[in-house]
Figure (cartoon, rainbow, N blue to C red):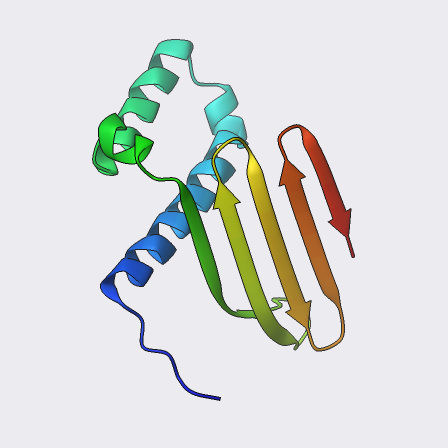
Length: 114
């Protein structure tokens, strides 16, 4: 298998996906649920500004990432693919050597297969 060299755009997309995952985790945390509405609005505005502002973010149509993944609890690894589009469309495919998982979100409908 050939090694693919990561381009600057690929690295930026990976960075965005990692940061968005961390942001989503924060929004689900107790610390965020105790934050007032005004504080939440300020935080969200700062995040949007950090990514270049509303105008730049509104031009992003889709994000995709592919790579290798390792399980933390078991010594297993595999391939990972994630594709996201506007209007709540998401496809995640995780394939370990001993198991796999697929997740699909299409608007308000979701599907998960383990």
